[in-house]
Length: 266
Image: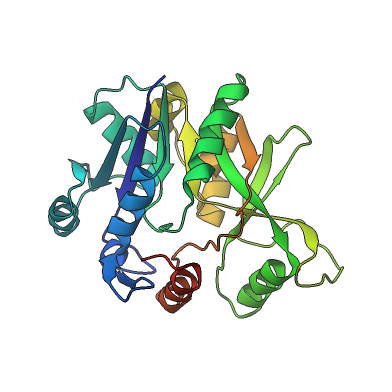
């Protein structure tokens, strides 16, 4: 019943080259790299057997080993984090019950997100992948809409069945709604959080599938599972008062630092 957490960390990001080594100052003013903060978030999850950083870049390997992380060197041919997790899983023995992909741009991921994800996958035998979603309040939805109006990708949204099985993920704001919502009011839009739990068979099969047209258009790796008929279950999670955001663009650094100050996170 073992769980492996892999943190894929790529230096050559198109939108933000060198992103894993970007420095984020916490509430106490101490700066740590994005990959270190992501590793610390993974290490805070109870019940995890092993945490490893998967990269193809010696600069990231050197930085990660300096703060004590186990590092797996993977191919430069990996097209996304899921492919990198699949390769790392094979290198590390391939005998884990569940593999978690904690993407290296989500350092504020609360540990219960991963706990809920693992529990949700175990509870749904038909699902091969689990990923968390959070219901947007009016403030979050307005932020997404403002980003899109300005031509920025501020986050990914998800739609799913009554049973929680994913129908689609998009960088557009879906579903469309003409309603307006108060800042603290719940909305019908769900923010997809970029964390994944995979059953090993689905993860190992993933690199052999050709990317489909939807994955190519959206640039969302999880769509490859849907385009190949694999069931992805969306697990609704609660922030419990914690602020959460991924680092997508250089402009997100001050936003994340402000959130850490507000929450008192060093």
